[in-house]
Amino acid sequence: MKIGFSSVGCPGWDLPTIVSNAKAMGFQGVELRGLRGQMNLPLCPELTADPAATKALFAEAGVELACLGSSAAFHYRDPYRVADNQAEAREYIELAGKLGCPFVRVFGAEIPKRMFLGYESHDVVLARISKAVRELAPVAMDHRVTLLVENSGDFVDSQSIWFVVDSAESPAVKACWSQFAALTRNEPASISIKRLGSKIAIARICDGKFVAGGVESIEAPGKGDVNVALLVELLKGVAFDGYLMVDWPKLWNPSLADPEKVFPEAQKYLKSLLDIKRVELTAYKGDKNAPKFQTRREAAPTPV
Image 1 (cartoon, rainbow, N blue to C red):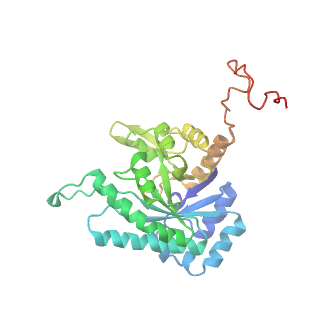
Image 2 (image 1 turned 30 degrees about the vertical axis):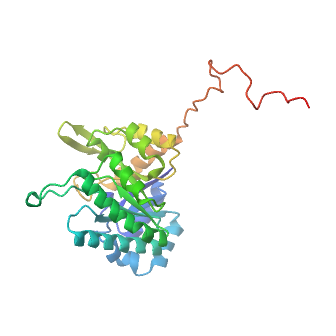
Image 3 (image 1 turned 180 degrees about the vertical axis):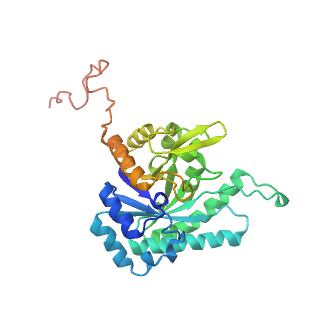
């Protein structure tokens, strides 16, 4: 597994600062979700004016541009709004292809709540999202990019995200999984990770305190109720080799601590979890209940 951070945690940093600090703090990659207040990355000249120079900036620092985070979502009833969001996703995919960035992130989003049109069921909206994502899969494939669907809004559960990813029937569609979001609907990691398994490409690391009414506070990784240690252990169990992406939402919560303090602590904590060796559960290494019979490998050769 690799460790990265999202630019939502450092809204005041420009691109060279993001890259240099990632290297200095020991991170292997970054996700760009907005840059210096511009949330539409294809409009950022730092990324588009000279893609080769941008690629060189990351390469020289030994830091990967791991993901471009878009605002695209496909839950809308209006087919023109869905088409507009697909167009946004295509722009991100094309930019990611030019930058050599492997992932573009989109959202599951919400069930539309417009009473005069009537309410739609969860499954109807989920089918619409799945159709839009499936139509984008060939575009992602053409640009050697993987489209990641993040659990959010009314679709934070692993069953919904599994359905969207699986229905795309493409290796160019996977999941960006936030266990923090899943816990807002009381879904534990023991269910989420087991269900999604290899469909997860990025695991967002956000932590916080929960109360009966929802989220009470955002906390640094390992200091809240998410149980990040268990999450990492379960990810090891499914042979996850993607990014643990630190999601410190300072962009949306300016009162949160500065990234200069939180990021190094988060990197150190996550690395300590990765350094813990998994206990190998096997009946063939010192187990008192190990079988006493000969295995096929140990059996004597058959006389000729």
